[in-house]
Image (cartoon, rainbow, N blue to C red):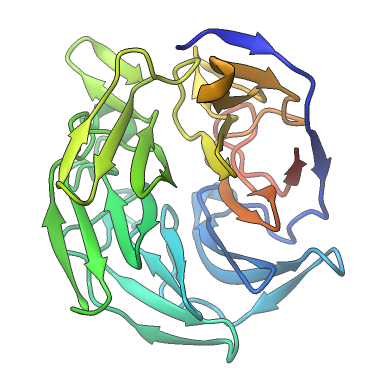
Amino acid sequence: MNTTKTNSAGCWTRLPPLQIARSHPSVATYAGKIYAFGGGGPQFKSLNSVICFDPDSNNWQKRRQMPTLRSGTVAATIGDKIYVMGGGFRQDDGMFRFLTKVEIYHPDSDSWEMGPDLLMPHDYPAVAVVNNAIYVIGGHHPDATQGGPKTDPGFDFCERLVLEKGSWEQIAALPTPRFALSAVTHDDKILAMGGVAFRPEGFNNFTVIERYDPATNQWSSDADFSLPWPAAGLGSAMLGDELYVFGGYSDDSIHPRTARYNAAQDGWQQVTPLPSPVCAMGVTVCDDSIYTVGGWADDGRTPIDACFRYTP
């Protein structure tokens, strides 16, 4: 069901701002702390800075820089390592360069090592972890390095890193090619949500939710289960069995709205909105709260230093 109801549950709290405003960072949680990697800074110059937020002391600290400056990466925590994957940067000639690079961060020693390269470049894809395997889903099309997003048909290529093998392998293609999508893991399956791509009829923001089953290597979708509104650059997270989506770009605007889905409650409920409109932010879950880091302001161009925490 996609009926959207209104509920005032939950609370967003504004956290200390970033020292450097950024959009498109990747964010992960380790040992009760939030780590943010790179992103697009002022004038969309890609960053290689790494920062760590400690909820107990309520402050940000600098950590060792990434070896490669980039934005649009995705990050995933496996054991005591954080994998930072893909992304890209704008070159001096104005063209984009999308990367296959994987770098592994060790929070305990504040050090980096190189990981196995992706099979294909993925800029602004989605990421999920299922049973100790990392999945990278879609993103900007590798050939869309000149015209920018508004000519980008999106990418359907998906791959996974099985740690025991130490290499990436291709999996079933994403049925709806797209970038600026979001993904969560639920019941050992991946939900790939929203996103955007250029189609012959125009630039489309999607409501689609497609479900990937690693056991069968198949994608499926349900006509009765989609986002409550079209959204690209949205945030998403699971808290228990409840799916939250928030922010993002749709209807020519960036929104603060937040919704929660629980199948037992018959569909989506709108809950407390973000304090301000935001998209292209980093998102992670830590101690049963959702954290957002940076993003774009409501003009869709200016990186912000704002960070928020949602407590249900």
